[in-house]
Image 1 (tube, helix red, strand yellow):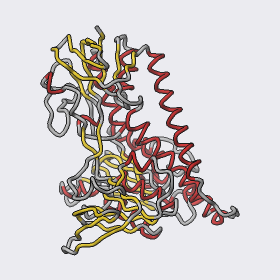
Image 2 (spheres, rainbow, N blue to C red):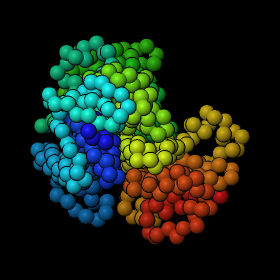
Image 3 (tube, rainbow, N blue to C red):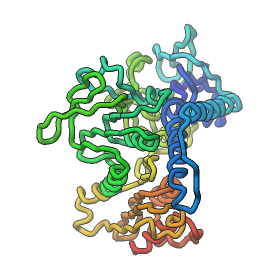
Image 4 (cartoon, helix red, strand yellow):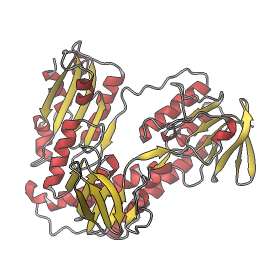
Length: 454
């Protein structure tokens, strides 16, 4: 009997497997496809690899702004895709080595919970049965597919997996959904020369991210030629055309060689026997702060909980689950979960947003104050981002505790970890400023903004 059986080998599953094995547990990890899950195989890594190629293309095209002459920059899309595949293969192989070095048994097969109770759960995979004292469910998520008439019949429609496997750059792309995934693909194909149209049901792009930064990013991409139709409901797909209704009831159409369906993801809770052991499921698997499900001895982590569908959240939830299994009490906190959009420029945020503070009445009462500065307050940003625009925003309590940090501009993703650490440690503005900040760095804009918050 194993100490722990893990179903799913993504960022939650393989992190948990390694942590548990190093903690002295015997671990079996089931993965029906490839180790690394959606993140390494069809999400985070392949998209960021493609986006970096697009960023290099943008830099080459605008090198004259920096006094450099570059002959006409062109795209070898086959070579771009080949490099993406190479990066994925290398990283998936790295996860495989980590599992082997940790002593984790990996079973490449679909696993099904077929019964048992605390102390003796039974999992079936590839005709074999495995027993484990504990179960950790990390089955992730899958793309949400809304009931749009004509969707299933259109050969032009692709999901995030399908668009990653394209062999040619489409001349026109219609994206249904202006969230993080939709905007990253809008950024990618806009740079590659595609005519991009984004149709979003909400009145803004990027959902819950900071409204002001979302609007600024939209304006920048509108200047680059991306068309946005917000507050619009898609009512059907006819061949290569998307039919949508505007807020005033007008019916419009948008045509594309490809149509990307990007309306979010949902927890993968069916097809592996949760019902056989009585695990409670709502939007996802219901868990407490220790990542325990309604069934003693069964834990869940990652997208399958339906809460925060981000790879880094999944890994942290897995660490919390394993710590509790090992008798090291831990609880999951979602107060400082970083969110990043890898467009060019990047958008990044952690903690309380301005709209959340306003909705709670915290701005009106003065309980929370906002400080913001253009990214150009950083000399390094000016030196490296000719004609670049951006913003740094800090939300802090009247007492000084930092509650939220939001940035637009490159490299926002590399600045955000410091803000996430400060918020998770409940640091004040003064405590953050007590450190010596290196110069010249783009991160200095955060220091400058914090100083205006005093």
